[in-house]
Amino acid sequence: MIALRLHRSPASTLQPLSLCRAFRHAWLAVCLLFLAGAATVAHAAVSLLLEQPYGKLNIFAPAGHAAIYLDHVCEETPVKLRPCRPGELGVVLSRYDHIGGHDWIAIPLIPYLYAVDSVSEIPESIDRASERQLRDAYRQKYLLSIAPNRPDGRAPGGNWYELLGSAFDRTSYGFRVNSTPEQDAELIASFNDRRNIEDYNGAFRNCADFARVTLNRFYPHAIRRNYIADFGLTSPKSVARSLSHYAAKHPETGFEVFMIAQVKGELPRSHSNADLVEGILKRYGVPLVIVSPVSTAVVIAAYLGHGRFSMPRDPPLLDLAGLSTDDLSDLIVRPFPETAPILPQPTFALTPVPEGFLPSTVAAGAVRQVSLVRAGVAP
Image 1: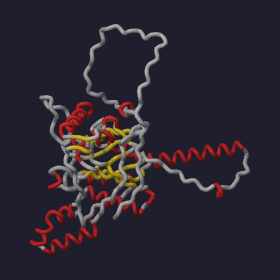
Image 2: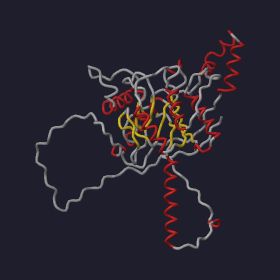
Image 3: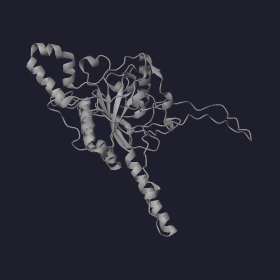
Image 4: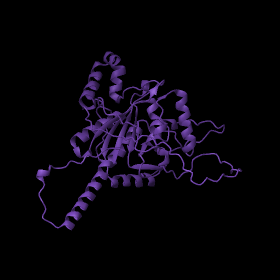
């Protein structure tokens, strides 16, 4: 959650008001309502999550993944959106192929990053077996409608696992800009009304294209295809580059950058993102120079002139070491049922509570807070 700072004028600049007490009180009330409304608008945000590539995919597809995080939009079901209730942290929208035939899926922030419901359950470190167990447990609890069990009861195939525990496998960078309640409401209505049918294409309708189109709903024409440096294809890093350049020209976006660090553990560390041309030059630069020096020079010129983008150095962490609640699972209201066994009714008699009995106080978790600190991006 983002803390809003209200800048007050020095007392010497304020002029005394020779008005009656009632009018002064009314004026103060109006000012407070205005500030409260401004704080609400400033707090809402949409963020591009630029997720690093990991595993063997880094060899063939070093682009990584792009997703959209909205802090005032939540999921009613994995394929239906609604406004967030107090205490909820928002939703991550992402596009993968082979997930129940859907074009996009909505997952709450904490499960998307850590495959658990509450902050108190986030593991300090992770290994492969624990990662699989956490992901499958969450799937069986909430995602059977889009990733049902196989006939033998085992987990299905497909990319559903990418929707859970992203921070186990990779580090992500967040590029945040402001949104308004009207924009959030329009997005909710649009996504709920349109057909959510898989239309994935690795070249022109990939995860980065989904992020590009979604961000352009908030800031039209902010993200464009780069036909020089990216040959017209959209990559996650190119979306971050376009958004950063747009925000540099439009300070009203309230641009901020943050990082979500990969969870410690035995899993291999993720790698830095690369655009199409950048990936070609890094992996095949020497052979290209030998085969065709002229073509290589053209590619290098395109990259340096239109595609070069430096990732932010030492951005502030999105510290989920704690939120201002003891257990988010008590606040997340899900209208769709959890998959839980039906327990038989107790057959024993309940013992009456003795008169004067006082229950013990359950220790509450420490009060925690998520904060994002403004940071710049080196172009």
